[in-house]
Every structure is written in C-alpha cells, then in structure tokens.
Length: 111
Image (cartoon, rainbow, N blue to C red; front, side):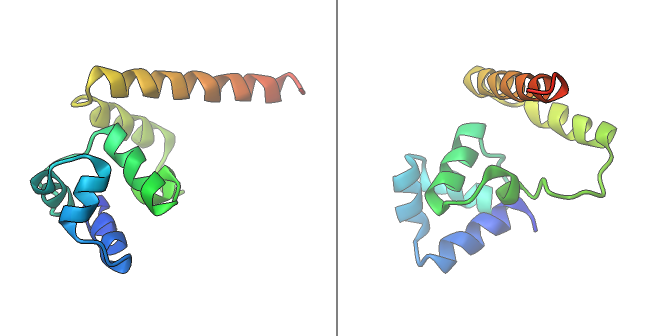
C-alpha cells in the first residue's frame, strides 16, 4: 500500500480528521492532504512522528518489510529518497546507520 494511503487509512481508522492530525503533528493540513494523496513526500521527521502517533514502527509504515527487493535496489531506493531530505533528517539517517553498523560489528565479534 502506498505511504499516503496508509496514513489516510490509519487516520480514518482512528477517527481523526486531517485538521486534528496535522495539528498534533505540528504540520499544515494542506501538507498532510498532499502526503495522503501522494502529491508531497513527507520529511523523515514527519514519518517518524506519524509512526509514533499511531504506535507503529517506521518500517511497517513505509512497507520496507518487502523481502522481494534485492540489496542494490534497496540502496537505490534509499539514495533516491535522500535527495530531497533536509540536513537534519540526513543527520538522523547517518546516526541511525552508524548505530546499526556498530550492532552488526558487535554481532560479528561474538559479543
């Protein structure tokens, strides 16, 4: 399911208007509408806030659990998606990747 449609479905299932959700997320209602219709891409911060609000993880919100996509395609999706992010979102991604890499190194060392 497309991201915007998923947000819209979650919002409607929780009986929340666009105006109320936008207010809770501290974003413009028109921006939320454009996200739901696929006309605008949300920032990483907005994605994280939506996931937090609905108490779901970002991966399930973004449908990143698809095992049929190979690694090089996943990397392309990530790099393409990063082109329009603001610096603070890019910084967050860098920190997340660093933490994940450290965890894999720990596993490889047998800790």
